[in-house]
Image (cartoon, rainbow, N blue to C red):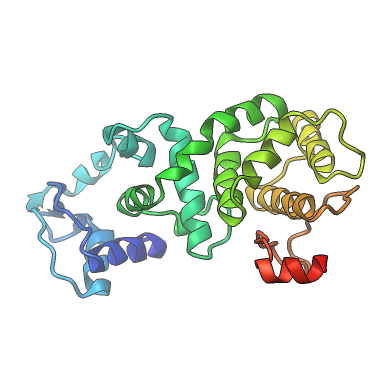
Length: 253
């Protein structure tokens, strides 16, 4: 039994998101529970009463053919709701969900949103889709994944309107930039990731490096070597927001 899945189901039940879909709790003729342990443990954990269809008296051997079909993933659910580029959008919503909830930015299933949570997030923040055209261009020029770019455009623009878009446009047009420009340093990392099969960045490290490059670019700092080493004392970087107007005026004065 996967406890992380039980917690996810229980949380959905507590929020009132659980919907009966006709999938039964299946019990063998000798009383053995064949299918439904995660749902039943989630009911216990949540303390919420939910209805289930229950089928009893099945042969014990019938368990071998259960759950053999393909389950709908988030991309499938988004497609059913009329969305486009659903594979990228599903990845983007999972990243944004982790970011909003303070989870590590990786691909862990334990911190992924449920379909209901992802749809609610999309309804609240539809602007996440606006960076997709630029993200496709960044993919062609650097190999940086569309989902990563689109989420960061959205978050960078949120922190400082328009600056995320400008930053990634600069990544696509690096001609004339000095060697110390953070965009040049980031492109060097991305090009190595594409060129060297022994050099592969995890999503967590990739996010950190892009955020560090963006912060330095906004502050006008030179960066010649871009690095992030998880597991050391270096904390995951935060996206810097612009200083309040009064602080900027004081600095300029």
